[in-house]
Length: 320
Ligand SMILES: Nc1ncnc2c1ncn2[C@@H]1O[C@H](COP(=O)(O)OP(=O)(O)OP(=O)(O)O)[C@@H](O)[C@H]1O
Ligand SMILES: [Mg+2]
Figure 1 (cartoon, rainbow, N blue to C red):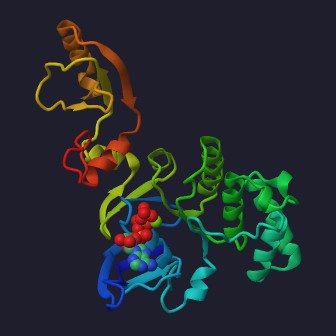
Figure 2: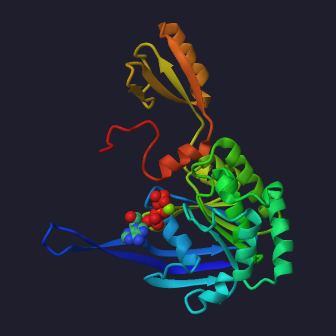
Figure 3: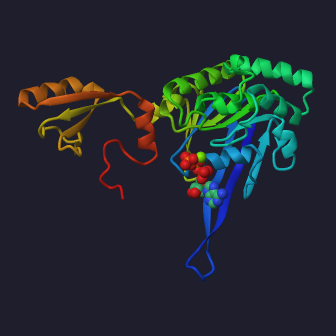
């Protein structure tokens, strides 16, 4: 459904060296030859540290940005040669993008976009009603978008992107900045799209989201594919374990391999793999170490991400 072959992107920037000097030319290799195959109906989560190249990749697939090298195919169509055809296959929701007209109502926004996509007025209205239902905004059809919460706007932006019934939806951080209720509401929309068989490619920094929605995860690092698999596979492959973080009143005698970290308030924290917790707790009690708190780090993927992208759990000493 989506194929990338050797996709590379180099941004050229000029950095001002001084007030009167000419800028220094600098190249940033955002993508370094990415090969990728995404099957029809897959729900793919794209992970990676800030600046890894996620948005660049999404924009290239969405035909909004030209790659420096490589080929992109969407549903068998060459995205570089026939971007207009490819755009009909895609719904795109970019981060922080203001594609909605705030003075218009939800329905007016959808009808306007339907018109741009060559839908007849009747078709557009029927589709808009269907989509408002899907994103849980049926009751807000005639309310202007400026009165919407961020979560409602985000859901309407998804509806807008789906007006022309694209088989593929591209999303860049769809839940960033939303409260947990807003996040759950967006997830509900994405889950029903997954069930309807829409192919989704979504960048996210939300590990809970990455664990729950996608059927496949891609981690990119410095413009290259670092890991590819189901959330469970990636977590297992990284050797990540669920961890318990203990907050202690005094320095414990612990085995090597367990790292003790001093917190800002002077207390100590100790990270322990959950399977070693009973033994460690027994030892602490025997040594009379005061245990102030125990926290289980819920997400295996959270730790897997930190491990795979080069920042091991509980060592922050080398950070600049
Ligand atoms: N228009 C641009 N001009 C110059 N450099 C850019 C441009 N857009 C992105 N970059 C650089 O390319 C690299 C990849 O950026 P990109 O936005 O794709 O990363 P990202 O994975 O989406 O990061 P984030 O998680 O912060 O959104 C970064 O080093 C970024 O600074
Ligand atoms: Mg980005």
